[in-house]
Image (cartoon, rainbow, N blue to C red; front, top):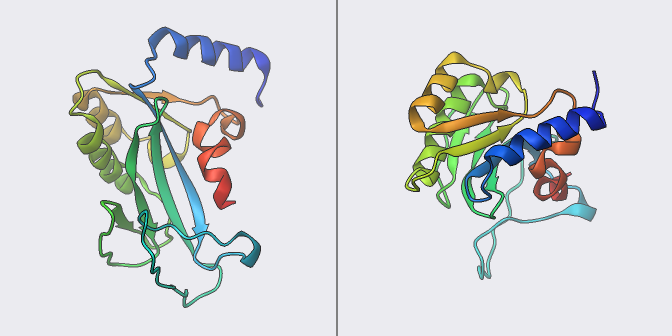
Length: 176
């Protein structure tokens, strides 16, 4: 079944019952090409940095996966980057992870949950984490960790993330 108004209203009404803008976070992954399109070239670096190095990919079309999380109130968790390699040197308080494919896995999602918890759990309220139904998000270990850590997982309705996933329709749009 695809995205429809009834499904959206039910989802939205359920969220309104339990939400506070500072306690709900959205997580999403997006692929970023290491060889940008010349018309859409963007560089991510610390503010006010005048000299930015140029990095050239060894292979055209290689993708790095960025895992982003932002609260409805605008608080963000430093991103995680998944590289198609074996080692990573951390920068900018970013969590670096590696996988053969450069994509998120169940184990990497659990690692990211620890990163998320480190940044959002100093606050008292339980956090609600809005996510899609990607297979990497579905594991008993991750579910148990969230329960023990005070994180409530809220899953988007199937086939609706392109309309309902806040990070998909706002922040990550610039990378496409």
